[in-house]
Length: 343
Image (tube, rainbow, N blue to C red; front, top):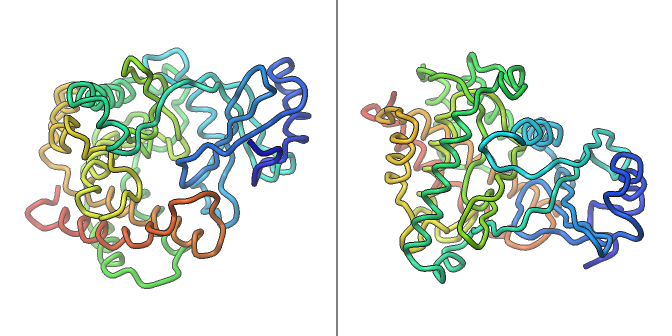
């Protein structure tokens, strides 16, 4: 542990916590950067007696609305008493002057964010299958939450959600352009020209995958994390994005995000769709647009990370292979939007 990790000055953090959450931590603080994140920065902070988690946006080049600490804090606070497992929230600070960026503080939940097939493989195929099934079941549970009932009725604007998503990710791409990416403008144009049918609105996580969940020793999902892109909209965007994440390891040589789905026993992408469809009673036969949007979104996110990496604005290791993963994702998105697969 370092006394002052990059992006987290501990003295002002301690003063803030003394005011906002008296008794939570006491005495000199120590902190370490939690490995694995490629976007918002996550720190484990302790006074030697108790540990909490602090989340803040990444250093340097930050895309507008892409690293919203307030949204993460609000949605997890709202879901606290639902079937969706989330950490307890302790405090939030929208003032960037305290540590250099907005941040929030939450419970340190014990669990493993499985990201690699090698981490899962030692558990055996039966346990891996159970974990992947609970991953899907937890998403089903999230999409069954009534936003109004938990105080999130104004958390987003569901009408026109899909069209706004296309525009938003194009804007994010324009903010991170540093090289030519073959096909990415064609993919955007085809999405923009489509007229998708939107289903019933619900709470959308926005980045749902296994390594954004904490799984305990009994293989139960203890917490759903990384809500920075959460909103109200078409829940099938979460389903399509999960399908893309599970498919990605077969498309790219590096584990740019996660290769957990390669572990023996893990649900295949189509098995995950089938389990969700059964749990929600939804027909998922026409997901072409949603899948194309998912691949576009992933390509833009990875291009943004590549931009920060090439400009020396990332913290930690594992960023050098991100750029090479973008083009195969674009190609997969175009395949999903073939005329015979469009919604």
